[in-house]
Image (cartoon, rainbow, N blue to C red):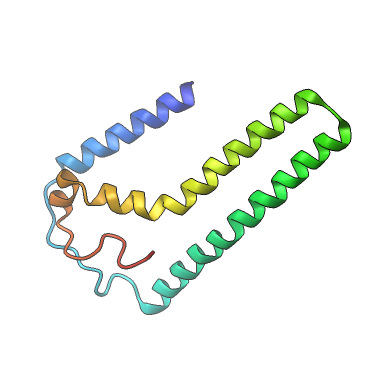
Length: 124
């Protein structure tokens, strides 16, 4: 509970700081990332999007397989709970760019940082 409260406090303070700061000059993606850096970031995101479902299936199969072999009723509840949490985390990973883009395009934040281009510089 304390960990969630700390995360909430840090998130609120970060949002307040972002909303209070003076607007900066218009930011553009030109010159921010080299083509090599852009390609490396996009490749890393694509690899993560490929590995996450594979890990989800493998780890879920191992958890459920061990429960079936041990014939443990409580283990089935635990394995199901772990699998559901992993599914939620896997879905969240796919939506991180969308969440970041949405937050950076919110009226108070977008006005303060004056983004001219896409806040993620075209990274999908």
